[in-house]
Length: 258
Image (tube, rainbow, N blue to C red; front, side, top):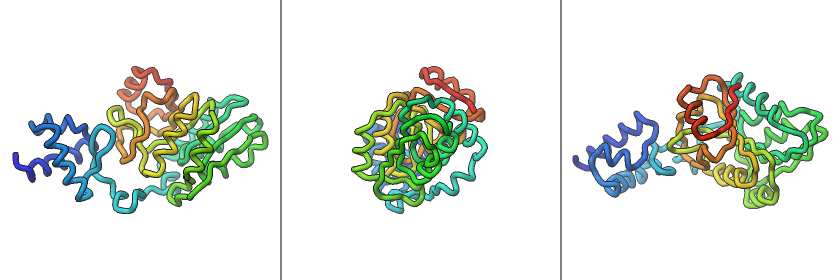
């Protein structure tokens, strides 16, 4: 098979499968791992593909705009709204008095912040404008805000100083959002600037709780930040496919369906 034929076939495979391990592509084409790597370098250079943790996906359009995706928090709040609301309410029920929480940016985590019991004494660490706004009225909560540069599409703040502030704290529970949840390619987000903050949050927390509606399962986004097995608990909605439920049970993850 000639190089241009391989490149065409690789793109077809990626369009069909959302994302693939490099070894799977090599096996399907009957060529070496290194041959596939060289082919993929051409697709990456032409901005048609993006190498990710353990494999490759078609390049998101966002890669043409300095790592920013067309995602906007305002748009996200209009998608799967009822499911996200139920997830937020259920996740809030996992909070206990005296907890120190880290609440990630996102539309689903905002529903969590809105449903925190108002009379519970807590410490809340966050770094997104919508999260601090949703939790600001909680009289018994100590608020810790990690600031920096604000990214308008997510209302998230990030900076080296913000990361250091998170590292100086230890949370009993972290509530983390995601744009994609895949059992081969891990848990992913849409914006490169989110990745380091999410990793730092996971490292700084005792219990790691993933909040993701059912539409996120099976998706692969451009920026990997964790394996699904890194999470103790997943809160999603009842629309999640049974085979995903089975896989999470096999990983020993505590699962809550809203």
